[in-house]
Amino acid sequence: MKTIHKSTFRELVLAMLVSLPVLNFIMMTEKMMRLSRLLSSVGASPGELFTIILYIQPELLLLTLPMAFLLSVLYTYGRMNADSELIILRASGMSFREAAKPAFILGIVCVMLGLLVSFRLEPEGKRDLRLAITNTLRLRAPSAIEPGTFNTFVKDTVIYAMHGEGRRLSGVFIYDERKPDRPVVIYAKTGGIEPTPDGTSFIFNLKDGLIHFTKGSRLIEIFFRNYNLLLPLSLDEPGKRLGELTPGELLKEAGQMKGLDKTRRYLELDSRLTYPLLSFAMMFLAPVLSLYSGRRARLGGLAMGTFIFAFYYVMLTYSQKLSEAGKLPHIIGGWGPFLIVLAVSLRAFRKVNRR
Image (tube, rainbow, N blue to C red; front, side, top):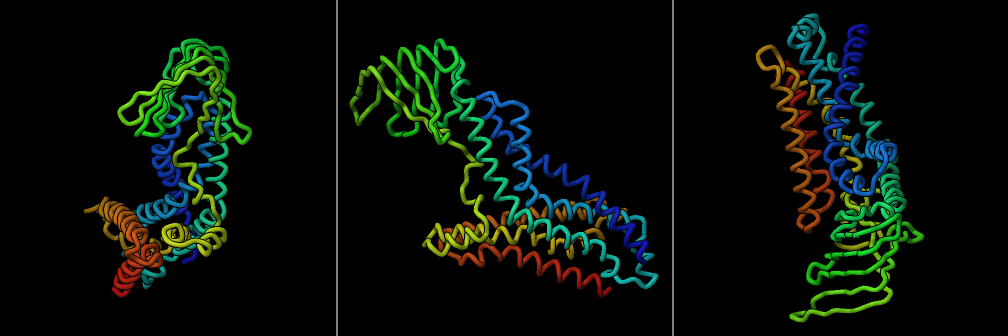
């Protein structure tokens, strides 16, 4: 029996080592498309992009670990079912629970690894990611303005310069739409650009120019000799401060806040726990789903597993939105979908084990 379990466990691990990088790559593609638009405009080097990819991995692992575990169990036990190995094992007196023991062991490992990622690696990874992107923009953005090109690395702002060398520009045109109800058009003969000491913004030192903006039905023009324009290096997804907090910090801040801010911190903490524990539910459900991956329906278990993950994430998003709207307590919004999946998994496993 130990030999059978070792062989099954080895096949599970190999299947997971193959599926995990593939899932990470798929999940990373969408994030990198958004980041590449920001970083390519400032000329980020391949080394800087590689560093940013590494910092994204902990956040992705939290999502892909349960998925990779499910796929590895479906592949391994689906093959055993297709080759009638499970039938032989059960005919020889081995219970379904005993046959699924290697999946239980790997599931517990995934839970422990997921908790480590959720509590420690993900907050640090998000913080390091934000700092890496900010530092890249701080160093490269001022010198990345290409003359004769519409530069859009600042959100809701377009910068155009007719001529330039390094950080000194001439014939500068700026369209600032950060306030949609009052866009501003700026023209200056010359301009210099310098980052602020904290690295979160940079200052455009403009000389001899004109500012156009509307106020109601009036068009206002302001001539200036010297004008300093502060432009923030705004970040999108990596700049979310909430994801950088540790569980202890989330609890501390939640105790000091009220209303929506309090609910969001509790929901974030709930997610830090339920995402890793999803592997615990999958270690009961995945062996059952593998029975549907026999000769007649090899993709049945995979299709059902994909549907369950999609249903879980839709249900989780919906319940969290209800909690943010004040219609559900955060404990139900954050834990309800997981408890439903766990209950279904335990019931299905118990039913199959009794056969």
